[in-house]
Length: 131
Image 1: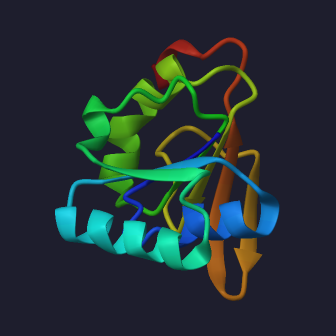
Image 2 (image 1 turned 135 degrees about the horizontal axis):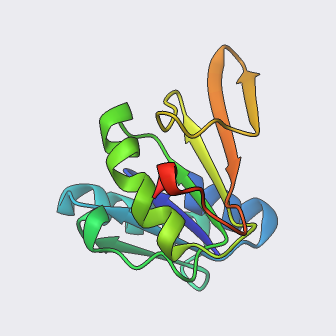
């Protein structure tokens, strides 16, 4: 299950559902962006596989997610990291566009069309310094 944090217009969740049949949830605090994301899901024909929720990220339950995507500021990533590591199951993946998660070193850093992408896998045992 894909969770996109700060999902905006829903393009990541909707595209994943359309191209790969992925089920997904988009979370955004802005009601206008949620409305736009739902309209885009309808246009893409994926409303049976996606949903968009207006909610604060810090009040969201991530336990169903197997992949989390985010394009948030570094300080938000760092603040969110302990919650993600606590709630995500081991081997869940986290993908961040442009910003890292502080002292949690990514498994991979990719350059895609001039954009930096950070990739982590949630470990079986979370080191104390990352909690």
